[in-house]
Image 1: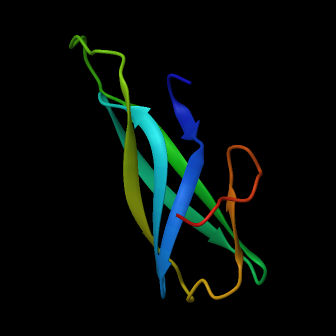
Image 2 (image 1 turned 180 degrees about the vertical axis):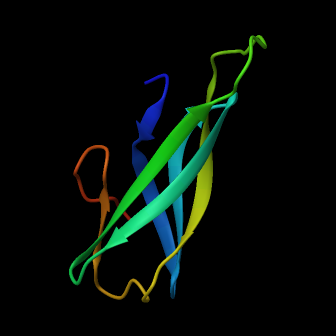
Length: 90
């Protein structure tokens, strides 16, 4: 998609820190956020294309963003908000 949510492909967890991996273009900026509940953590990665008329190559690369959770992940399931599916641990 040219803009909007990106599918999270994997994650790593260390206490309250979640590092999420996804594919994205090199000419956009990305932010990751988490919506937490007792049984799961729902991750959204939102793409914001660069402003202006600057030329940009259409190439994707694997990117990571870090999300700080309110509570440690523990045994909660990580869910990708874009697809609704469970995200595998890296």
